[in-house]
Amino acid sequence: MITYLSNNTDVVLAALRQHIVLALLPVLIGFVVALPIGYLGVRFPRVYHPLVNICGVLYSIPSLALFVFLPVILGTKILSPLNIVVALSIYTVALLARTVADGLRSVDELVTQSATAMGYRRFRRLVDVELPVALPVILAGLRAATVANISLVSVGALIGVGGLGQLFTRGFQLFYLEPILVGIILSIALAAVADLAIVLVQRLITPWSRV
Image (tube, rainbow, N blue to C red; front, side, top):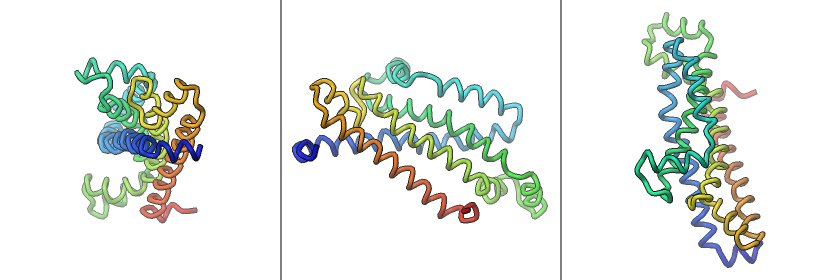
């Protein structure tokens, strides 16, 4: 495996860079989109259950089918990385919208009433009180979404775009074990590093939640 890495450093690094972008960009997009959607599920209680159902349906769509179907909707080429970004953004929104709603719903009503009594208006109360209290729940969902995206990117290799997944397909096509092992190890390491980074951020910005 060391020999393979030394002979194919540029290929492996290019696949790793593409994997990072394809996995983490949708997490960022999905998180930004999921915040207001999740808030709507709390602000308007009648929206919560339809929101949960829709998110469940979206997340149950097979990833490969979505990767193949999106070019028809978006008008992109089948090998465009945009298809992977959009598909994983949809999965991230589906996972995080419910998580955001559940996190905000978990905030004790006494806390929100106290903030209101102190003169906090709705938006300031959301930003300064409710979101900080809900952050541990939201970040737990973010961790799950990030690790899932890092895994799902590899499926895109079946249509020609997939970061480290390309090492898997190349290894299977050539009956060559080394690129498969490198792809697996780097995928696991990337997921572990991303998960650890979110944990460290959570510990930094929510010191009150430490055990």
